[in-house]
Length: 380
Image (cartoon, rainbow, N blue to C red; front, side):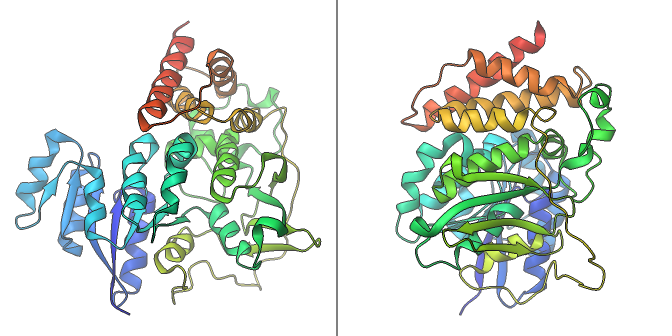
């Protein structure tokens, strides 16, 4: 086997930097051939000097020439999807809806997509799905839960008829066990203090409201074709069981490892094989208990908002994801309280008119509408 060429879209973020760690752990098997960032010019310059990729993408026009000057001999462009041309595997770690072009282009090119950008699949599921049938195209999820499900499903030769339900685990975030009343005055810093994972601010807030888990329910439906009635969420504070699949014979298969995002990244890079570096290996002498409890749906209303949007289908998930982005930004900026995140997203979804998208433009339109409605609600 030759060296696998890896492109990293969103190389300055947490998924991007950890992908580089995985590649550097097995330099005889993987090489980074493309790096892409929005505006993190200093970081991408440093990464490119270390990795010597064939291409660098900087979407921020003002910073592009600065990067090009610092990296003579390496082409620097502005189009995220350019990274696909020089890669066998593309890791899409771009945050938010901006990552859609990378998802579409990778699948269209019949390559392996390591998808950490959940928005592009959640919002544009109806547009992305047909491209998964492209010869050679593989979509391997790069988050702990869907990677776990992907691994569990390999234990069945007929998952379509043998899967009884998917059980997504949630850490419960920093506010697990707290009542709605006690959360009325929590600060941004408290919401950002995740007990088991180190993630970016937006996804950490989504974890605290369980919106992240709700979006993952929609993503599980899109990835694996399981109906919403057969996707459950269970709170598991240790984040060691990353998700489970229950089969028709009553058997439940779970995937366990210590919380380490390099494991799902390595799984995507190596698929259908496994890498040789044991990220997330469990030390059984230190693990004394695993706890599970149902989520508190009255306090964490975002979970059911996501289920409702998923069941509505069409453009509803795109509007939900977009509205949530705007509302979370308002919370991070100190304009609203944590308790109001669900309230504002709920108001948007009551007003949003769901349609069936037939093109990327329809999805972008729903995304824009969700943002506009959220901005209007916040300004009242």
